[in-house]
Each structure stands twice: as C-alpha cells, then as structure tokens.
Length: 81
Image (cartoon, rainbow, N blue to C red; front, side, top):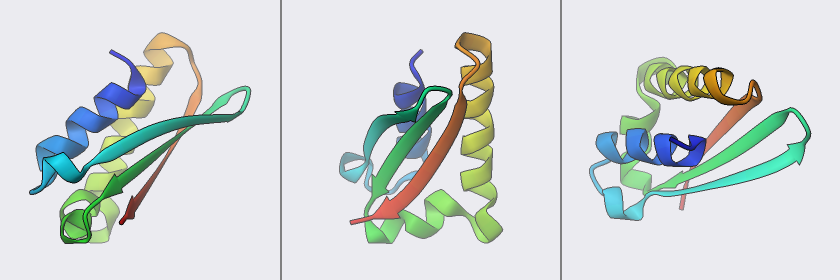
C-alpha cells in the first residue's frame, strides 16, 4: 500500500465528512516524503485529536509503513480548507 493511500484511508476513517478529505504527496528532498492532508474545518478536531494524539498516531503508522518499504522519512501536514 502506498503512503498516500494509507494516509487517506486512516484520515477518511476518522473524518465525519470523508468526501472532503484530500491527500497529496510532495518529494522536496531525496530522503523525505511530504504528505499534505486537507480536511474540512469541522473535521480538524477529530483528525488532530486532543493534544495532537490522533495526528501523531497517523504519523507513526505511516512512518512505520515507509520504513518497511523504502526507508524514507515522512512528514505529514494536516490543514483545513
């Protein structure tokens, strides 16, 4: 499973409006994968969680999948639109 698909699956599973979730991947540097997640304003609290606990969990799962695959560092940025 690709990192973007995994991230999208995890975020859509949490979001109240899964149709509003948008996930894109950018590779700025050779060893870093940047994933940008956009959710509706209403879903920001659900996706980030209290103290960022859910967002950190998503980052941990996606980073583990990256280490299994190609050993690149993953940065996930969550924003609303």
